[in-house]
Length: 174
Image (tube, rainbow, N blue to C red; front, side, top):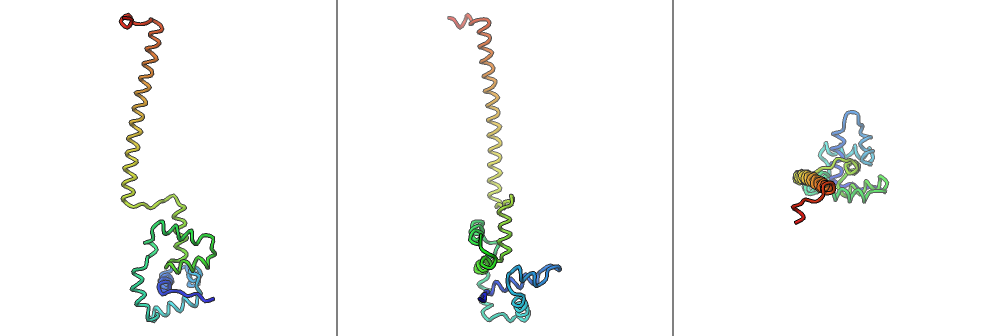
C-alpha cells in the first residue's frame, strides 16, 4: 500500500533534511520520518526547483492556519500520545501525518510528560508563588499558636502542682 503524504508533511520533511547536522545522513532522516529515501530525495529536488504541485501555494497559505507542534496544548498532546500508544511505528506515523506532526514530536512530548520538569505559564508561576507564600505564613502562625498552647499547658500543670503542694489559696476559698 502506497502512503499518501500531504504537502505540509513534505515541506517539513525537506526542511528537516536540509537542516540536518553534519553527522546525519539523508538515509537517517528518511528512516526517522519513515519515508523512503528516494521519496525524500525527490522532494528535496522538487523544492530546489520549486516544482511542488500547483496546489502547494494554496496549502502553504492554509498551513499557516494549521497548528504547529509547539501550538498544541498539554491536553491535546496527551490525547495524541494516548491515541498512538501501543501502535507500531508505521501506524503512529500515519496518525501523526494526518495531524501535521512527526513521530519525534510524540517522543519528545512523552519525555516532557515523564520528566519532573513541568512547563508553566507566568500566571501559573505567580499563583504558585502566592500559594507557597500563603502556606509559609500559615505554617508560621500554626507554629506560634502551638508554642502559645504549650506554654499555657505548662502554666496549668505548674498551677496544679502548686495547689497540690501548698493547697488552695485563701482568697480562692471565699
